[in-house]
Length: 213
Image (cartoon, rainbow, N blue to C red):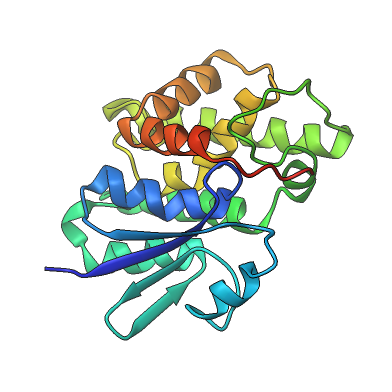
C-alpha cells in the first residue's frame, strides 16, 4: 500500500496545491496531508524542510520527493495506472496533456489579476490581457467537451488530470463573477459539485488567514 504525503499551502489561496489534492481525492488514492500556512515568517523554512525547490505542492513517498503540480500528476498516473488520471484514448490523452501544459505555463495575466480566493467574491477586474486568457480558457473547455467529453461531465468525459489542472480556474470564475458561455458554465458547475471540491472549499472556509493581493 502506498504511503503518500502531500504537502500543500493554505487551501483558500494555494491554487497549485489544489491540483494534485483533488486528483488524489477523486481517484480514491489514500494520502496524508501537511498544510503550511502561506506568507508567514516561517513559511519558506517550513517548505524547505520538505523540498529544496521551496514551493508547494510536494508529494512524498518514502525517501522520494516529487515537486511541481504537473510532475506530481504525471507521477501519480504512472504509480496508479488503474486510476486513469489521463484519458485512455491516445488522441484524447495527447490533447489533455497539451491543455494541461498550457494551463501550467501560461495565463499569467489571469493569475495576477484574478488570484484564487475561495472565500471571497469580487467584481471582475480584468484588463484586456486577462480577458484574452478568460476567452482562451473557455475555448479550451468548449473544444475538449465537444470533441472528447461525451462520456461524462468533464473535459474528457470522466474526471482526469486535465480537470485537476483547471480546477483552480473554475473557482476563480466564480470568485470574480466571470460571465461564461453555457458549456463553460455547465462544466464549472460539474467541477464545483465534486465531493472533493466541496471538501476542499469547506476547509478553506474554516481557515483564518487573510492574504491581501
